[in-house]
Structure formats: C-alpha cells, structure tokens
Image 1 (tube, rainbow, N blue to C red):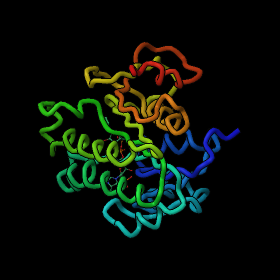
Image 2: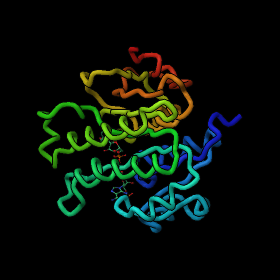
Image 3: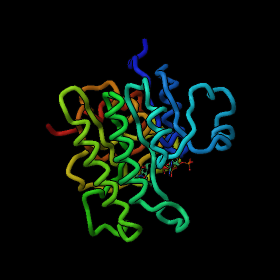
Image 4: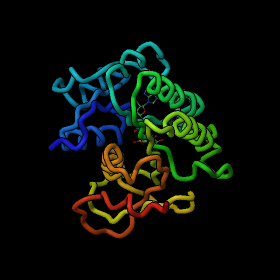
Length: 232
Ligand SMILES: NC(=O)c1ccc[n+]([C@@H]2O[C@H](COP(=O)([O-])OP(=O)(O)OC[C@H]3O[C@@H](n4cnc5c(N)ncnc54)[C@H](OP(=O)(O)O)[C@@H]3O)[C@@H](O)[C@H]2O)c1
C-alpha cells in the first residue's frame, strides 16, 4: 500500500541527494513532481521515462514556481548553493532567499508539509563553513521561515540537518539523529533521502528539526527508528 497518498514536489531533483529522493519516492510508489532547471541534465540522469512528471524552472522564477507547485501536497527541498563556485549564485540567493520563496509559494498554494534539507552547524555563526558566503547562517534563515510558515496547526515541517554528505550506499549504517546542533560526522546521501521521504508520513517527524549522521557499519532493514531518537 502507498504510505503517502499526496503528490510530492521535489526541488533540486537533479542534485546528488535529489536523485536519491526520487528513487525512494518511486520505491514507495509515491506520486511526485520534479522541479529542475536543466532539461538536458534531467534527460542525462533519468532518460525520457519521467518527463511527464517534471517542470522546468529555476528557484528565482516565481511564476514558474507558482505554476509548478499547483496541486501538490508536500514538498521536499534538496536545493543547495555551491559556495565554492564564485560564478554561482551565493548562499543568500539559494539557501536563504530561494528557500524562503519556495516556502511562501508552497504555503500560498496550500501544501501541507515541507521537508527541508539544511546542514549540521546551521546554528553556529563561528563555523568555518560560514567563511563561504555565510552559508550556514543563510541555511538557518531559510529554516526559520519554513518553521514559521509550516509550524501551524494544519501544516507541518521536518528539517533535516545532515553531516557531510557521502555518495555511499544507503541502509549500511546505524544512524544517529539528535537535536541541539552539537554532533558532528557524515552520512550517506541515500540515507538522508530515505529519512526525508519517511518524514512525509511518520508522526515522529512532525514539526521536528534534527541533525543526522551515521554511526557504526551495520546493515539496516528500515531507518524509521531515527524519529524515536528525538527528545520531546
Ligand atoms: N555537500 C555536503 O556535504 C552537505 C552537507 C550538509 C548539508 N548539505 C545540504 O544538503 C542538500 C543536498 O546537498 P547535495 O550536495 O546533494 O546537493 P547538490 O548535489 O549540490 O545539488 C543541489 C541542487 O540544488 C539545485 N540548485 C542550485 N541552485 C539552483 C537554482 N538557482 N534553481 C534551481 N535549482 C538550483 C541544483 O540544480 P542543478 O542540478 O541544476 O545543478 C541541484 O539540483 C543541500 O541543501 C546542501 O546544502 C550538503
């Protein structure tokens, strides 16, 4: 049985975690709509098979976003800036303003759930990564807007702050989820994708912000127990 009956809008679907999110939505048979800025990259990654479920547009294009978010029920954002590239838009444009724009339009379109990929260290102004366009500070500002708009009674959010992302297979490690932004480590993109998708329908993820890293190597049947680790 399909665990989630709505349509999930995926922002950043051609990114390295976004692709894993698509795989997990397909695994669970959940309907999706991908929002990507490059039709060529989409074709290169996924072929033609899913083109009916795709909208092309950038995070900056408000009209394209408004139209693409119509008739969706939830959103997962795997969008992220590339602060190491001086020619790319800065974190203020993507991780703060882009996420704020996504949240505002999603809320105005009546979406009920927002799952945001942020980052470990988002609450740490002195973190060395903030030397690059204040990326973690920008992520926190994006998070704050998602919490503000989706923390109300009839909507909800889940904000995942992963450690350093790895292109390793999912379900191969015990995970640690925590609150308070005091852990450090890394985690597979596939595991982050699975936890993001599980957040759509697990009550333990409702209105939660948490960090996520991997611990010892140990094959996992399911990652749903991460939500039990979160303190009330
Ligand atoms: N890398 C890490 O170690 C790390 C650690 C913690 C948290 N995170 C966060 O985790 C998330 C996933 O990271 P990742 O490394 O898997 O991401 P990624 O591969 O860098 O992908 C980022 C995605 O954002 C999209 N994007 C960027 N600017 C855009 C714009 N203006 N309009 C539309 N789309 C835009 C990219 O589109 P294109 O595909 O068209 O380029 C891509 O799909 C991000 O939020 C990242 O900040 C990363």
